[in-house]
Every structure is written in C-alpha cells, then in structure tokens.
Length: 334
Image 1 (tube, rainbow, N blue to C red):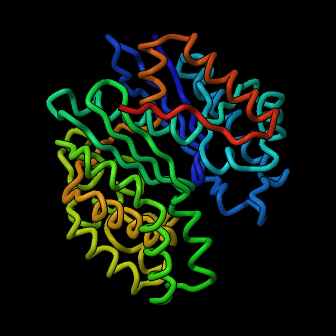
Image 2: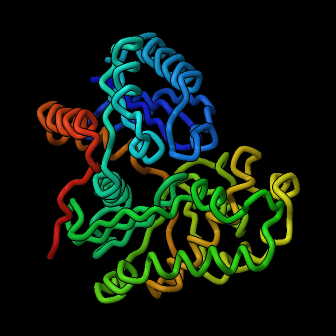
Image 3: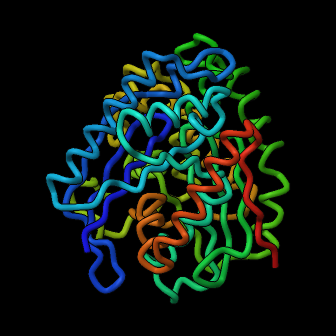
C-alpha cells in the first residue's frame, strides 16, 4: 500500500509519499513548496485570495505528484497559520473545489499527539517515559507519555515565525530589550506546561521539527546529508551559545551559518529562544533529534487505526471551521 500526506505549514507545503510495509511508512519520494504563509497574512491573520491561489496551486501539484508515484490522493493537513485564519472556511472550500482535497485543520493538541506517536515509533519502547517538543512557525507543541499515545499534550502560541513578527518589529537583528521581552513571554507561557514535564521526570526527551534540526546542526550535530539514522543530539548549553550567536547577527549573516537555511534565518533566533527556555524550565539538559514528526505521525495513525480515524478527524475539522469556533481536542490526563 502506498500512501501520501501533504502538510500545509507556516513556511512550507511538504509532501511525503511512503510505502506502508509491515506498519512502517518507508518514504519513496518527498517534495516541497516554499509559500511562507505566515508572512502573507494580514494583521488579523486573514489569508489573501492571491495567497490562497498559490496554496491551491501547490496542493494541486502535490496531488499530481502523488498520483505519478502511484499513491492515493494525499491526506491533507494544515497547522497554525490556516487553523487561526478568520477566513479558514473559505480556504478549505477553495482547496476542496480546486484540488479535490479535504484539507484537515489539525488542532494543536492533536498535532502534539501525532508527533508524539511518530517519536515513540522511531525511538522505540526502550526510550521509556518520553517528552517530545516541536517548534513550528505558529505554535509550540509539547507531549509526554509512557505508551503509544501521550498522557499529556499542550499547544502554545509560541511558533518561531509568530514570535519573530511580534518581537523583531523591523529590527535586524532585534535589540537586547526585544530579546529579553521575547524570553519573558516564552517563560510566562510555558511555565505551567514545564512544571508538568518536570513533575513527570521523563527518562528520554526528543525534539522534532525543522527548527530543532537546524539548531542542532548549528550546535555541532551531523549534517542532514549523512542520513536519518545518524544519532543527533542538542545540549541545552550548546543551544544557549546558539542564542547568543544568533542575537548578534542579521538574518543575511545567520543564513551563512551551518544548518541555518535562508528561508528560516530570520526566525531562527526566536526558535532558539523558545527551545532554550523550554529546555531550561523543564529541566531537560539534552534532547535527541527525531527525524520523524507530524507527517509521519499522520501516516502511522492512518496505518494503525484505519480510514475511519481519518474520516472522523476530517469531519470534526469541517464542523469546527464552518462554525468559526476555536479548534480544540480533548487533552488526555493521567
């Protein structure tokens, strides 16, 4: 069985095509389209018609690519930027009309749950009690658990792109006061979540997302070209050094550093501040960088729980979007 998933993130639309062999999604092809949606919304978060057109064009290309590789039409998901857009019903309608896809707006807590599942499957049961951190463009997801799915999840509005817009304020690089204000906000927002993770005292901590991958490379981890099976870790002390370095450089110079890509150079400082603050407040000294994240989590859940699970999530997304209500999902507790 060949499956595909396309993820509409704050920066990039990414497609993964995978063979589901013995319950494991083995990638056969990937593609991406750099739309940078988070930078193309108005002050209220509304996505302009021109940007919707670019989005539907990228998703139509994803459908064509998936079919060319012999996969069914992609499971289509969207995260914070589309999820919080006031005109999200119109965006979903345009995607359905122009691409034939049901774009599912994942609640942040479900993002955390699916990312946790992918980290658990990648790292195995010997990881024991597991904490997972994921920094996106629009939100930060945190999860903890001892089993297949997490016992605790949280989603916070601490995405790297969101915080860059809020605190950089045209400064390149932001001044010390802006960085201090950013750090204070992150500390305030993450305090309660961090207290829960400290109390759980996880045996293993993992980090996913492109933000953590690039920061780990900046901190000395192996280059991505060496493949996913090379162990990569990021120590809190090294991440603090990354914060200090990134704070002194404009975006153009950050993009010349190891691991920092030009499209993410501007938001790399905010991502580093979030990552360091979260690790410090949770008491985590080192995280393992997990190459599997949200997209793999969607594929795994579909493989393990079937099409009925996906239909339920899509239905819930459409009802919530149509009602223009906040998208939430119940948070499991111990």
